[in-house]
Length: 163
Image (cartoon, rainbow, N blue to C red; front, side, top):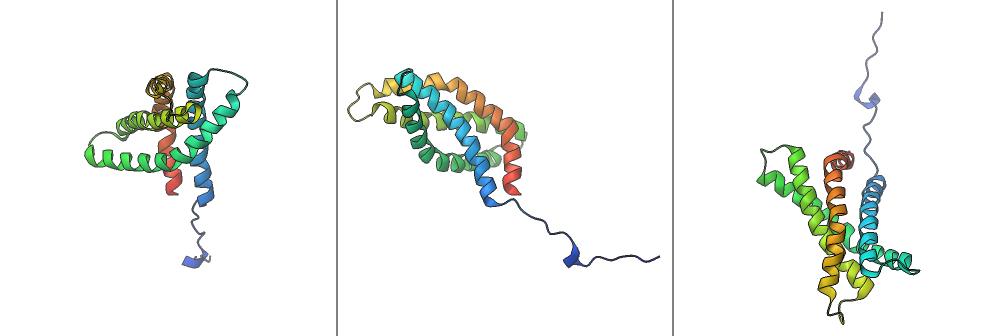
């Protein structure tokens, strides 16, 4: 009986996930969240009309250009910070805290960019009230999305991004 010995060069190579796939996953998740929240905020700013879709898409594109880089950076920083500050709590509890912080922070920025895009803020004395209206209308949606994503999708995405 003979045994076959594999040399190191014959082992299958471990392949990592291509960068473009990682970017597409993150962009898809942010598109779902940003599209939903800017839709709610645009509705609160303008109501539903014939121009709703165009206003929503314009606000979404502006928000996406601002939020995607900020969101990825903030999520990473907040996750690392809480890992350092709260090393002894379960990861699931840390993920809930990350989700809550991200929901409030990101949504406040989204409400600003959406309200500014839809109504303007230079000559709008009621900008603060309109920002608050869109922020608080979308807050339950944002909290639900962020906590759900932090508890279920975020750990899987982090593993996927590390691959």
